[in-house]
Length: 490
Ligand code: GLN
Image 1 (cartoon, rainbow, N blue to C red):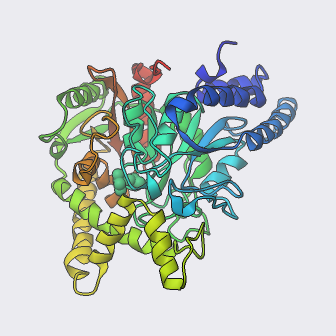
Image 2: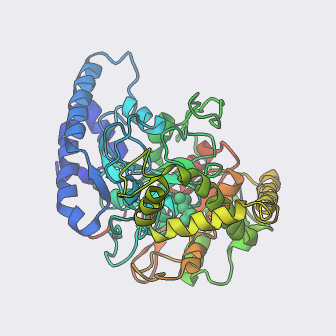
């Protein structure tokens, strides 16, 4: 067979089942490609080749047994090499969140989402690069250096799950786990030309996900198509007693055979086509919406009238929650400690030296918004507006089944382009934040290229717990188009 890394996850899964290839061969092919491309791409913060080969060997034993006795179902993730964003704990493996404050930290336990994909037979290749504590939209905030976009190495892969997106796009792995607090699965998926699923709040356990904004954080996945994402979603989703916000609802089986766009009502929010959106992005998204219409969907314009408030609301709520969540990194409980004379000096020295500038900015913003006298004016007010934004989605979903919109106003920008201007970076998130504030799921997938040859993505949103409808709709689009099959020229 040619290069095994060219297979899709589902093709690889079928070949494994038939015994044409082994998980070991797949894993070795991924590790070889990682070795060749990592010097240019830098998608990984830690690699786990020994663990991967061990898991692959175990997977091969089970696959062999399964071929002899097929009475027990075998998940499609069995023996498939994947990567995990470095904000998800994996026992004994360095987990840094892209931060020097967790340098060398090895968690004593594994996140539920990661454990569930391991239980479903996946092989873990390593931990992927991320903006520090998932704060950012470009992976440039990683303390360990940026990831490079496989489509153009001078450009960012998006963020904060930029390492996961780049690893999938460069075919170093068949899929990767990511997290999305304000767009961190969808936007890098869009910038790297892959498919990314942000799950509903509460659908996938947050246990073992190192917290950023606890009321916004979700675990998702990135792969080369919606069909490839289905087995990962099915493995990860579902109630977990270790996360008190995890939904008790049963996880439906996602049947792609039933995927049918006929009569599906798709709303296009007028507030998402604003000044500042690149014309090539708008055109590609509108063309993709037309494809949905041609395939039988009923497309109508809708309004999400509080959209312009999502950005200021998010950039109060997320930093406020982050400032509380990051209080635990004191140089005593986790990671390294800077030398100091006494306890207070130790706190200041460790946090001062080991948090990066964006994290410090957010801690200051968040602490300010939560302080006595300002709480009602900022955090309290933001929560009220958040309820209005959620109400917009609820009203829209009375009229339509799905919402279609852009993922980001631009395609991948140059490394350093937003340099010293955090506000211009925050504007990149304008189309992804509302879903997190409302807690609803979203999927991003490629719908074309701009004149520079950079991927353009579009987004679908569904009501809370509506992931099956998202995966089916994106799959229908991908059955009719080939954008998701394009590879970067690496
Ligand atoms: N870019 C957004 C932020 O910086 C979202 C990040 C995320 O989803 N983790 O907060």
